[in-house]
Length: 174
Image (cartoon, rainbow, N blue to C red; front, side, top):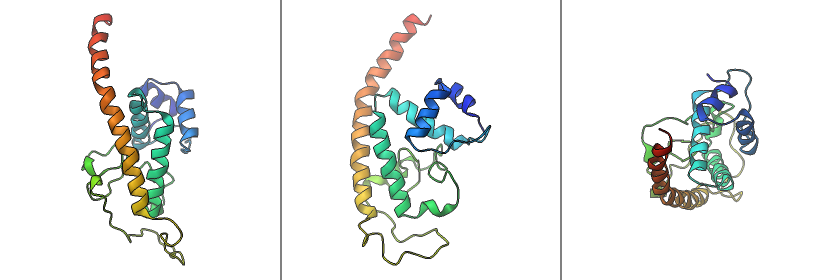
């Protein structure tokens, strides 16, 4: 478990910066050493993507799509206040995981398929299906995949520059 200060030090960012990320991504703020390793992994992902010149607005858009998709699949019914962060930091099956929440979707994401109809909630289902109410998990998945592809393309453009900057930094850090 971590404190906000521990995470700030680990990410080389100020606690004020991390508090701003929490607010903008609507993350719960914990007391004391109440932050899990998964919470830190999520913040690390955001910091790394920002270092690769991915706008925070783009990350927030992707974040909202991921959370919406997980809600449509009833992943939010697990009972954890940080249900959307609990998979962060896991490394198995990377091609099946969402970018920010790191949730394992069970299939390779480019396949555009989902196992619909799963409901982990203990409460009664809605009178109408989400699709009949205008919410369609496959539509949200399609939006997510388009947005993720743009981010991946932007990252691939930045990586050579970051590698060159690392090589260059060795000259001045000696």
